[in-house]
Image (cartoon, rainbow, N blue to C red):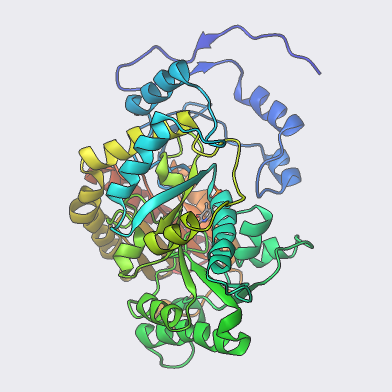
Length: 477
Ligand SMILES: *Cc1c(COP(=O)(O)O)cnc(C)c1O
């Protein structure tokens, strides 16, 4: 199939406040071509091709526009990543300048370059005190692959070769490479992966609303779930357990926030049995909870942190692993570390990350999430949905939240067809020009960190309209 080059026409005249998009094709043409040639991630392509994809053509601030001209407020910051919002010229300029000066060079073979040096130094400044070394890759998944490599290398340096097992959690998300998918606890991904990485086991998640039995308080339940780690370590023998990995709060799993008792207990157990503690900060990092890193919000100290998404605000791909001094020093003292990627520390990605982190710092964006917009967002959500007939829980901190849809909020009774209810609600959101994601029966929000209070009001009121419509459709009011 071949297509002639289409005439380039402006969809609308340029306006100072709006980006312009040069539409080369109609929505129908885009959909036809997309269906003909593009396989989407995590999608039922048959169903998608019948209904047609939404074509997003431009974005500014917290809004995206589709090819029909609809302006949609992005309650998900893309895929949890556009922390500084869309259309920041500083990031585009950084990429442009770097591409002209040094578009690519590797960091193998005794070489380095200024952007990766500056980025590493700034990350060391922004991260908590013991994190002074960073290894780079291109995504969160590769970050977690890298974590496994570092964990095994670390135990080799300690001459504890039997420490091979990594413990993770059901309904955790750690990416979609073979290692990321195995570390993650998404059953629908495991089912489709006959080949998995060896020596990875899972314990239960700290999901109070969905899984607590009896009269346990959230704090008691979280402690019990943390102690599953201890039970599992004792079953396997501490001499065989290398690391525990978890997201400080589960993102893709439904924005599940463990009670305050959870992480201190996990940390106690990891220290007691000499097990490395890995925080997957791919969503939680770079200001999402109002702290620079989500483990600071929960008050624990990991040995390794996985970074991606907000590292570049998604403008270009980049991931990284931050190493605690004691892990870094062991690696540094040990000789060769046999791991690397062609694009480790890519100069353009590093330049964009650097510009992004400077915006987050210099415009006090993270501080603002902590003291102003974050508390406002959480309060507005709680005021709006406190007694809603199908909202059972509002979880979150800063600018991330999970709303639990439930048949009977008071008794924590969930819908039998929760996934369908979530999808129904998600579609009502889309039709109301709000992007809010559904994970099963939980509705998720994670807007750009630059969102203003009026824009927060717009998101919450649109979410209310969609959730009300969902309740009406289900005959609940
Ligand atoms: C998105 C995500 C990943 C995977 O990142 P990719 O860039 O998609 O590979 C890993 N961990 C967590 C917690 C994530 O949310």
